[in-house]
Amino acid sequence: MASSASTPTQSFTSGTRPSLSAVPHLVDGARRWGCRDWVPPGDYARVRLDPALGAAIAAAYVAAPTLDQQAVASYDAFRRETVRQYEYLVGRPEFGGLGVTVRVMDVDPYTKAGTMIDDLAHRTLKVFATAATDNPHPYLSDAENDMFRAVHDAFGHAAIGRGFDRHGEEAAWLKHSGMYSRLARRALTTETRGQNCAMIFHHRYERFPEQKAALLPRAFSDPRTVRLAGLPSG
Image 1 (cartoon, one colour):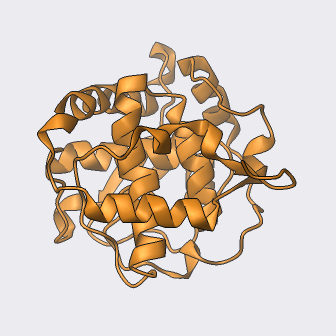
Image 2: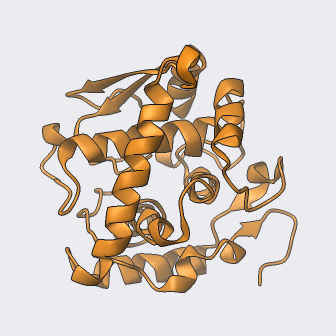
């Protein structure tokens, strides 16, 4: 779940086996965007988050400053590309968009990923408003952060049919990485892989971590660090 500031619910931890279906128009939409898939189609169902790697990512996130000036170039690129993806997501189909209606809510709209994916199958999506939380982003505006929540849920989760457990979040980061430039991908990694690992391995699901605009070590943005079920790590 992209940059959520809500109290983690059971949906983050329930099960590790993907049981959802990818949304066809988002699968096609991600392909038409020209995204680069880091693993062959179908392998997203096999993505798993290695606990040792997750703990290392969490430690790096917690140690990072709230706002690092060295991250500005990456976050500027991330912001521009996120806005473009959002315009594509909500744009009218006759003009090349995907026609998804996004509603920003004052309460967390989803406790289960299946409900969100079902909404997106019907071209609607709700996102939890950043302004309704006490966890603002240090660099993005509330509206920009809400846009990112929308595109990540659509192109990260719904385009591959993976939920909010730790393995689903890893798969969503991997998928969505292919829709960003190399520069913006560093910020994306902080926003998704970094935040989720900090919540899971540092805060033990008790709360969502402080949002940051910082860069994690470059290796953590490398898709080659991902483990696939049935294959040895490393």
